[in-house]
Length: 400
Image (cartoon, rainbow, N blue to C red; front, side, top):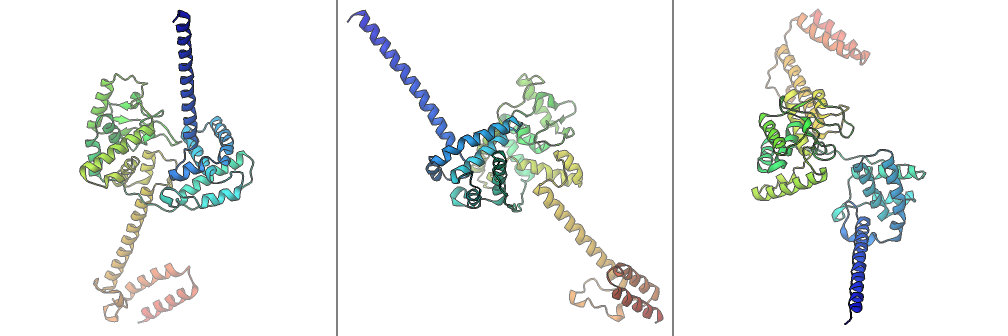
């Protein structure tokens, strides 16, 4: 075999290798585009694989991408753009977005995992995303109204939070402890808008949170001596400068790491209640702790960073309702006890014995006059007949 033949074979093998590498790159790109097109939230995989190949869905992707670029140009956050992307692609798999009637029916009949109907809260979010799509494409559409179902949240107990903090390792334990002591959001601890080394004030034992999600600035949040020491050692160990991010990684990775750790801990302790604890429940735990400590909702609003007091916090709403009910019951109980003591009625009388016997009434005319006068003032604005009756009753008592 000559040198030219060997050189020709080498060049041919080199060209074939280049073709193979190009083909593998092309296949990877196609696989990435296919997986992105099949991406959707809250739906079964079998339906996904069938619906994602429809030509109607593929034809609607450019219009969705134009809207996403428009939202990015208007300064929307990446998380907001991702929510629009998932919601619109979910609707595009089920209906033609240019047909408002078909899209409305798709939202009304939308089913999630295991063919279960979705909540009205998620339907309302789908309607908001589709309303933005219609406004951008100049489509006239009257948005339906879905009233969210009221939900109650049970924050974890102090013992469960202590178990989560003590059983975790490394930086995860520190991050869980920060949320439970300051009420910061997960996005405010790790991510692009997460904590920096300059936000740790070890001399005053406080943390200053960065503003996210358009919330109000919060005062310096105090922490315990133990957490302060752990943060100081963590900064010294990693040689962090003041402008360095304290915990590297995205906020999505923080949530995934916590869920894996939580599930392993629930299996290890054989406690299924630990599996129900979400990362955001630690913020609700901080909220309820501060409510019990301060007994002031306005102070808690400032600490949580909310702009309005009527922000939808199920924990705060539930606490305020229980508080108002207990106060109302206490006032009613106190007024009934006072009236019974003044009229010398036994406290152990039942509801059937509400009729006051004449022998138990104090017949002192000035005393009865004061009681009837108070009722007269309370009922005078309701009807003239009641006031006239009370007047005549008072006069007859005084005449006796």
